[in-house]
Image (tube, rainbow over the protein chains, first blue to last red):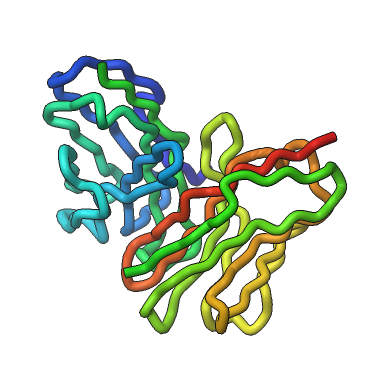
Length: 113
Length: 112
């Protein structure tokens, strides 16, 4: 089954404690991205990756890091989380940037206290 | 830069009636795609429909249709015969030379 998986699905953590949210896709997609969703703001892109070892900033990259060492994985790293990063996070993948077949993961709800 | 505007924060519709969710966009890309996604209370993003900027006909997928008016830069979603299960947030999005950009969403509530 074609899918994007994210882990964990729910996370409560404290300010400053480094965390990683994993994202994996099994469709051999080149393009992967991370979004955060906040009430009244819709989804905003954090980072995206066109292919292995190629990443670029989206609209709201501050406080986040990503890596793309393998085609299937695109982890999101919060080196020092802060309460304003409390949000719902989505990973997405597609064949390429312009493909209309965008696959979303189930979401990770993060709370930083 | 690309931009999506959804002017209706919330909408109500009677069950079995049709409803139109508005979406206007702004882009300088000659070629682009427009998407609609549904997000139920469970949180997942569900792809509904896609319209390419050069597609001659309006896209349709079952009860969903996209009213694409290129000159007006609008891409409204029409849901026919609303069902209680259609109650959700709906997001319009655009892709082109820049990654997918989303609107702020419209919350649709279907009333029995």
